[in-house]
Length: 103
Image (tube, rainbow, N blue to C red; front, side, top):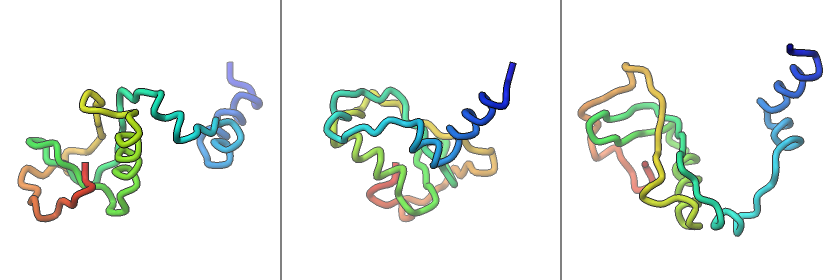
């Protein structure tokens, strides 16, 4: 049964203040001792044939993935997934819009 106390704790986990209060800081050097099995990234558009995706253009997800890869936490066996609506699928996503950092 949900109480006011559990509701508050659940709400805290969903915002940045709650993350800071309830989360654990992980030193980047410790990340190399971890192995990430699945990375979930946001997408604006995805080519369902090649799996190429574009995000919002800031590169945050791509940079985080690149950092984990560089530190050895991700490798070729790490599954990268996203969720999209069918209107976000584009079979002919031109290679010219892809940049070096795009997953």
